[in-house]
Length: 429
Ligand code: EPZ
Image 1 (cartoon, protein in one colour):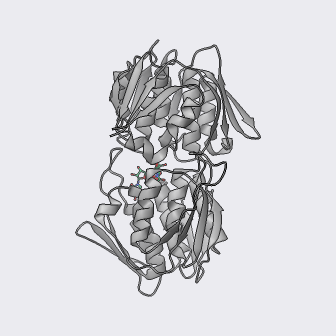
Image 2: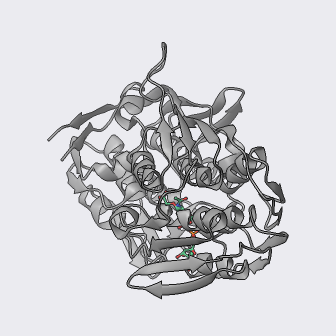
Image 3: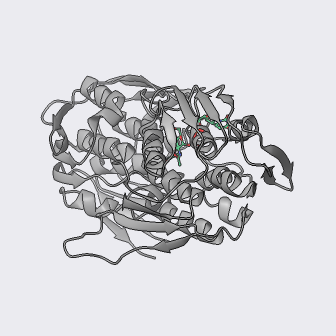
């Protein structure tokens, strides 16, 4: 099993190209099930979650074409992926496939919308909390689906097709909003989605669906209207830059000090996180080519942050912020309100010398003068990258085990960091 070895202490200087967003690419790929035409996606990151979802989609009959490398392309140049679900041969997504990745449950909506039926394994628990799918099923029910749960599967049917309806989510849910959108675009009549997620990834999905012929207004606000159409066509769409990758590298630069341009990053997609970095004493400069992050000389100030749905501070940057705040001058307070068990990184950061106290949904991080390298273990995607941030500033060597978590969501991490001066390498085996 691969490991990442980091020797801390180097400042980061240079530029880092930001990849296409994993959490936009996944629902966009799933949306290809809605049409018998080809959906071509550009700027798709080369990640294991993308390959896993490709496998899941091919089980439903989706053909995939990935052109080879072109002159001038590098490891972190996003790939182009053409997906064509001309004939859906199987409306069942089995446990063996769905259990590897939670987002694959979302195939339930396009399969139901296009084929009138779907049988999808319930995703089960995961490291960051229970993560149920009740809101997703409720949304499908509001559009006329009949649902039963049998032997660990959600079986949904709508033999006469879905009909527009009124969906009110009790809590903001990204996956619920993706599901409702993908079901509503082919339903008869108008659907209203209230308390919809406003995340950039929802806006990106709506933009692609619109190119495919869907009639959607209000994406990016908390009320979305969809007027169903009889058929969708193919389209070509480029995946938005990854705001979580952007925030992660911004925190890495804040941690080590230095000056890095995050190429292609869109500040408006992570304003809350950038504001927190400024409060901590980091320079954030919006440039034409991206976002520049700079910290020279002075130390980090502690912050008080609560995770919230977009446009609030994202839960997917909470672990990274905690990694950063381990070196602040004072005590930071970080409250996690989205997932109930998303503090798995605390124990591992402690192995580097971090001082973090947990009290329910709140972590108090007492900044320390120095961190010291140690062997650590990744527990989930964002937790593992918080260890990378800690390791970059720690004295000596840190070896991060279970790197497959990082490979799910960070394209060419070692290459991007080492090009800016970090001592980081992948150790195979
Ligand atoms: C998406 O997960 C992201 N995943 C997550 O990123 C991200 O942390 C999360 O949104 C919140 O921003 C992808 O986009 C692939 P939710 P999702 O439905 O859609 C509760 C990463 O590291 N809930 O918005 O599954 C749920 O338990 C991942 O890239 C229900 O109670 O999250 C949570 O408390 C991790 N019932 C809250 O809502 C439901 O039916 C928000 O979850 C659905 C959700």
